Length: 194
Image: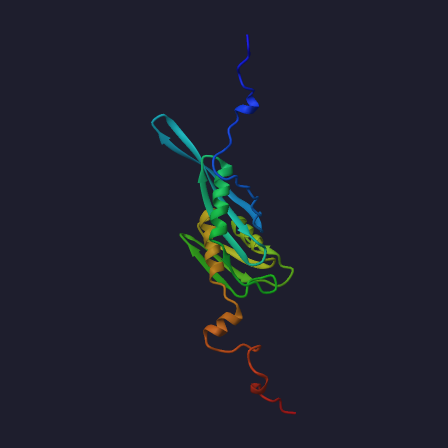
């Protein structure tokens, strides 16, 4: 009896189209921190369907930070969705001497977060969600107080609203139509009487 079967190695067909070489994406810079993970339940006809909600902060440590919520059936997927949204909706704000430039109050829902610049060596005086956001943003000295609801999602978004309100001294002067000390020409500066 003759064996008419072809070996398995010859049976493989070539894939149609051009062969594409996959390139590994460069990992985005910055740190990713999970603030809170909650298990959610939906009651359906057959019982309960469980899911997960993740609150994630992404920061580069140099005044750029983003916060987002991701929902999925697995924690890993919820975190990755939240991380993607946080990078997409990140906010850039000025940092002066490792602290914020001025006092600010951010509100979101029934939560409010008050922040004030602090002297060097003070550290980050803040609650759980607010602290993680400020540390991810690169702030080393700050005083803060959470007012109202202590819901971690609302506190995180209130902190982001406060950071959006921050402006540098130069930005305020230009918005008022005034020149900064660096922009004033040498001949216009008043002569000092001797």
